[in-house]
Image 1: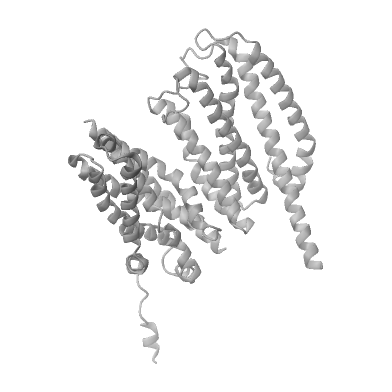
Image 2: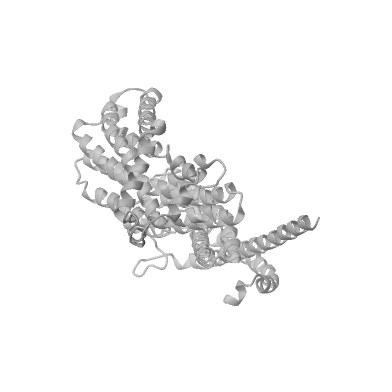
Length: 239
Length: 236
């Protein structure tokens, strides 16, 4: 596991892995989409239940990407490892995109179900704060010229932002909100109708693969970008 | 000079002395140059004055949002002098001296945040009840406004100091601090304005106050360490 913290070995290992992940993500997304459109409509929600297959995985990955960012930030800060810093940086944009997608599809779902595009309930607000953390992280990174300093300052912010994750996760249990409480993987709850499990799980897996592919590709791009920067600096020195 | 004299060179000021000196210096800088508290209070009053002009002066519309608006203005006014908190010391080299001094950098960040609270948070906490009254908040709630503003101001000072440390050496630092810090300001605003709302509708305010205090304590623990790490990084 930690052998991969060597950029050289990381590149060699992820080189063949990344296209496989992209392929898996594409196949799973295709199958998931087909399943999502062929399951019967819900007796209560009608066709809008299908939004779930886009919305819930996006929200999960929005949180998951921040966890990845936070853990990478920790390793970047404590062990001063360049690869961890690249990983933290690479997780920010996909994470922000997933969170934005969750907010957007949630809004589309809220309109027919709750009769409103947006309410200031705990879950929605804390997810919005998560999105703001992503923006702050990227803004901080972008506005400090020295890349190493920018990376470390952003890592501190990334760690502080981890506090928000449990708040998002448990907001529906701690506060009485309009957003429904966790229904999947909750012991004792009636949970999801088994009919919806195949498309739901497929889409979850598809989003997971998609994030893994996006993340690895972005890390690889970042490593290459740094190599180019180093080469340029060396050339400039020699000239 | 005899050997004995050398041995009895003036003892360095102890930890307590160094803390007091730094706190006094920070307060002098905040109160003295530039009128930080006056600026913050003036900004606060301006924001309060704009709301009735923008939303109409009807007491029936203003009353219910008075507490919330007071908290919004409080959060924004708390941002004002953050940019100078570390930047000024960084530019003139005082921050390097502070790093070498008796106090750990964590303590320096803590003291700077405390000074920020005393110099900016306290005057704002005194202004907030007046502003809330002007917006037709019931007079019985004004002590609670002052109390929550005072506690919340500490939270703003701690997280604000953290944001100011993070933005050291950044371009457009002031704007960046706002983007970084305002998400962190959300919990105290929720709990503080929530306490006022609960009090207004006759519910107990204890839980909201407890959460507000919990946030402040949490920030007081995290901010010095994270802030010191950020300062070291900027000096690096």
